[in-house]
Image 1 (cartoon, rainbow, N blue to C red):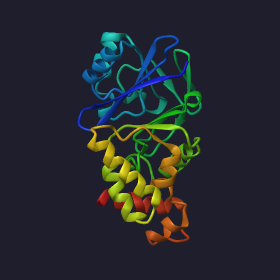
Image 2: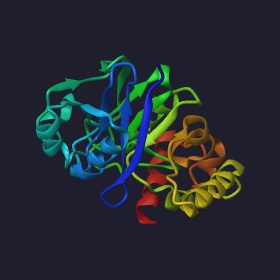
Image 3: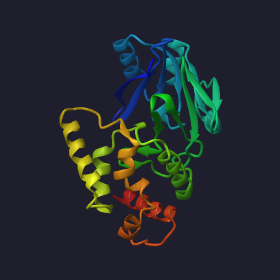
Image 4: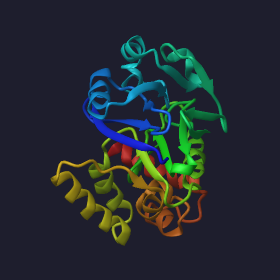
Length: 255
C-alpha cells in the first residue's frame, strides 16, 4: 500500500509532516519542531506515532522530541554525527543506511552543509524525499557549519533523485525564495510559472510544498550553479560550479 503523508505548520514557518504506512499502522514524524501541532495531526488522522526521523540538530527541528517520546514511546532516529546534540536518540544512521517505518523502506543520504551532520530521508518506492533544511523550494539552507563546496555536493546528491520525487522541506520560504531567484534568472520561464503557482497556493492558504525534483531542477538557482547562463548572470562564467553556488548563496544571505 502506498505511503500517506500529512503536512502542517509548526512554530512560525516550519513544516511538520507525518509519514504513515497504512499496512502496519506505523507513523513517523519527520523532525519534531514542536509537539502540539504533531499531536493535533495525529488526532485528526487517527494515526499512531511510532518514530521520529530527525534530519539535523537545530532546535526548531528537535524541540518537540522529549514531549512526544514521553507520550508515545516512539523511536527517535538521528544522524550519527549529530546524535550527541539531539535528545533521547534510540538509533543513529549514516549514508545509505536503511530506515523502516512499518513496511515503508527508506534510505539515508548524508547532506551536510547547513549543519555538519545533516541527513535526508528518501523513500524511493513512494517517490518521497524529506530534505530538512538542505534544500527548499526554489532555495537552499544557509551554509552554517559546512562549506559552500560541501553544500553544493549535497545538493547534487539530491538533484540526482528522479524528477517525480516529491520534495518535503523544513520551512515555508518559497515566496521569498522566488523573489530572490528572479534576480539571478529573470527570464527563466519555469521560475515565472512557479511564481504564479505559489501566488495561487498562498492566496488559498495552501502550502507551497511538496515540490518535485523536476520542478526544482528547472527553477531553483541553487541547483543550477553549473548552468552556464546562471554563472554568467552572477559574473562568474567559467568558474567551478561550487564557486557559482557560493556567490548565489552569499547574495541570498544579503537579500
